Image 1: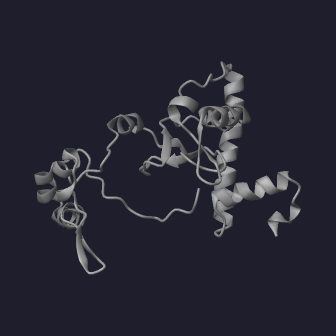
Image 2: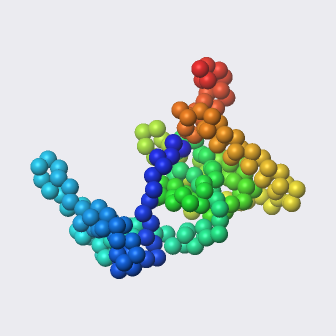
Length: 210
């Protein structure tokens, strides 16, 4: 919902430590120092934060891998050029397409589908209202939480015919492209900011664009 930090991620899933050391020695050394053996100094005292001192066997023994590698999601994303995602806890329930090269973190709910029809249904007011009723709430602002097992899995997707599905696809593609175009034209704006403006306009506060 914010601007991309354009950060790259070292993802060594599927590789063994010896293979990484032989094929990518610089990467191996970096991860070894920054993940496996990391020690920081705070208030004049050393603190061991590396995986060598992790209480979980999996993370300590597989120090070069992400703490959670979600192999099922990885398998589901194979062959897709994009997938649908929404932030788990957010003020505005927004679904969007992310490029398949983007690795979702633990704060995202990823739907391994690239079909705009599904994006359209999930973005519909019907599903948004459903998710608000079925999901949870968090924080001082009481922001809605999208719980996959409660909001997505049991949702009764419409039994649309071919023409209806195509109509939904066209609208959803236009929505996704429009949001991306507006953000590209206004570098100071975020997706959250965009929906904040939309909310104010709906409330009759025309000064929101000022």
